[in-house]
Length: 294
Image 1: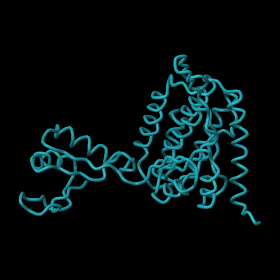
Image 2: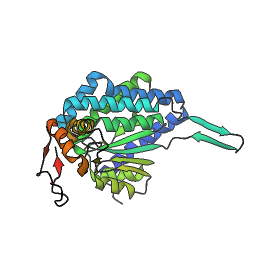
Image 3: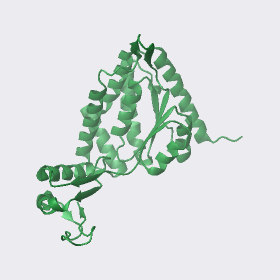
Image 4: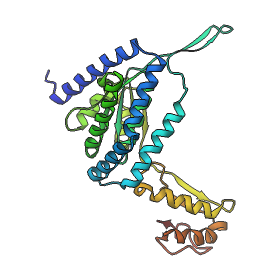
């Protein structure tokens, strides 16, 4: 049987990750897991490193803008660290003598994470923090345009690991240039896969036979009615839609305004540098003739 070099390289990285994770779990404690997660968070939040990652992300992917990516990298990471602060992920979580049920936290093993070019620093950083917090290793598959950014991020994380004496092999990325064959092998051999990106990647994850969490395309639609604070709604939608050139998953994809609020909302919307792609619909005309866009 002929096994390609691509498959062998993924298997080798997976073997290293499994070895590192076994040691991480065997010598694990809540303090160790928390310290590793914080080290990964600081690797991207440290201001100079954050700027370098933001600049490289825009330069290599052609997506977003540096100022907003700096904000995104900082706030998303800080928010995650705040959310998981104090969360118990090691040892006995609860023990109920009445029912005889004891809950014990146990790592899953190696997490496979497929990350998008739209968010090539903050998304992998957040995946890494979550994996480390729960005693896992992680192997990343960046998009082709996000490879350089992922490499830089891992370099920063490994530098922080060296300071705290943690195993670098806990956090890796697929070796060499990315390919569908490598990503497929990762999907099939990891213990859990987390996929952010195209519908094709999400579908492949769900069909891989490995437990999967997937987030594909499909940004939200927003409905504005007469009960809304129209000035605030216009401001927030405009800010969200223009932040990092609308690369965020939470950026609005469609805006629906009910008749009762339409004219008043439009008056507050246009000063936000927004415009109608078609003429505003007159009452009584066919639906869809007054779509709005930014």
